[in-house]
Length: 217
Image (tube, rainbow, N blue to C red; front, top):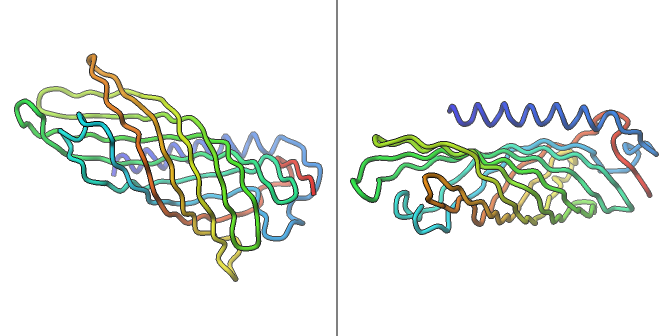
């Protein structure tokens, strides 16, 4: 619950900063005149998590976990159906395991944050996308022996599709794949926290303000 509250707080802060910056930019044309186009989306998502690191699997097992998350996107450029946007995401997951030496119970909590640039192509009901960006993972490991926390950074690639819900065009289902490379180092021990992620989400689109998007039809 603590991780979820922190996740919501971080995404809310990112939302305020992003929309404030976007509102300061001039627009060349009224983007709301484009049918089905929304310059901003907010959404929830549920993705899988499984670390590829053998050291991680020895302590926490190799089962796949689920990680809930929140996301925000803001379109920066619209060009005849193609869109370039800024995507912000925050997710959270935790695992409980046993230390490899003494078998003491240990727990790790991780909050991954992602910033990405994405390219999308809009059709009536299907919007495919690809993108890449940077990642920052905050991790906290607790055990009876010692507690360890810190930040690790890396990068990711992503791809997927939005499916627009007929009759409710502001709602779209998101299906995605993401691969992240992030390695945390503590006490001279390195652990890969990234890995493959599959997920599904639901996003709500709306137009925020009259500026912030360059539209070329």
